[in-house]
Image (cartoon, rainbow, N blue to C red):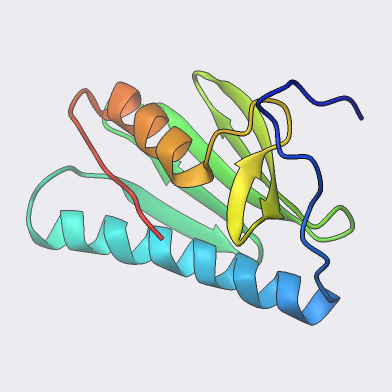
Length: 122
């Protein structure tokens, strides 16, 4: 796989157990943020999780899907703005092509699809 100059050079060495724990934590943090927004009436995003897949449905019918990829130890993000693959590098989930951080891209995509500024964080 080739990387751009901004992309991370080498993924963290993770055991399968570490990857699964980190992936579960990432999905749980997204779900917790969605729950807070629903409770505070910020935006109506419906989150549905099945195993390692989290589907977010936005007002207007668009979706964002976050999916774990255990064999590759990656997190995949599919949104209206594109599809992205992330690996754990230096303790952060970074895009394998651009080096962009997962939560920054998720926030950008969610904001575009919700029509208002939304900020996800780990």
